[in-house]
Length: 169
Image (cartoon, rainbow, N blue to C red; front, side, top):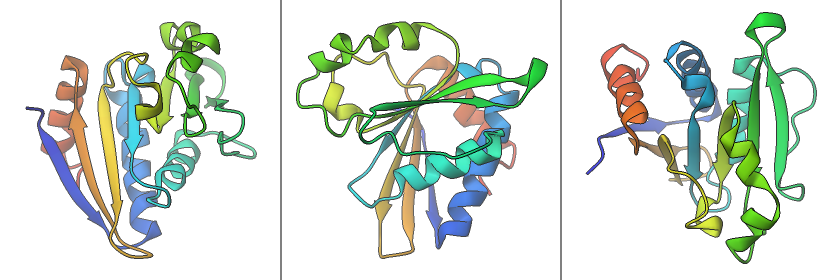
């Protein structure tokens, strides 16, 4: 059974703060810039809001679009020698997991970069294992219950660091 960190975000500023701490941690964890993170939760749980804050905190410039219709939006965080790719996926509109394979996403997942995946259950059996899963549950219009769990050895090391080094405050 994976270890789980649980938190409560009373408002969007708490979401933003969490995203900033996670972006910083991903850039320092060994292999963190190549993490696979699943975002789970119902419509309106705050998955895309979390991703937008995470992308901004990682240094993504310009407009950040939701990938709801495009399925994937590529981003570049940082500049020069510190630049790193980030891919934001939204599989909500997939009706068959085989669509993932048909779309050619295997190549993206085989390459470098952070992969953020909304609605991963829509492509069940196609995705490589997530390092971290962040599950969001809306308690009301503002508050979110958050559960972050690790599902790979790297994810476990990162979650242990998260819980042990003050990232989780």
